[in-house]
Length: 77
Image (tube, one colour):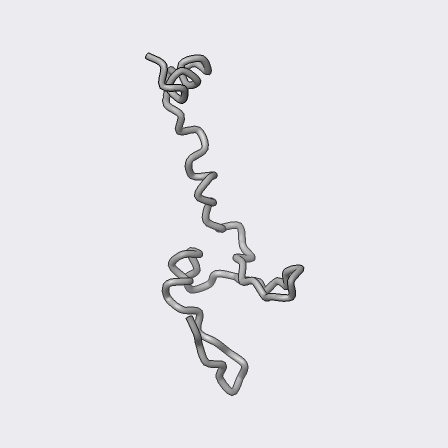
């Protein structure tokens, strides 16, 4: 996605990116330089969306023991 820089040095963050990152009016963002020299846009406030892994954390099912979970993953009855 490309965007144009205005005369004031401003850019519009594309809607798909805003939606993905949960950025809305009043959100704070930060530009960070990564080790390879690229610039990364991140949320600077505490409202960062949970990672896809964090959202799944704790969803193994209620009442299953470790042995039962291991049996399920092995395909045992």
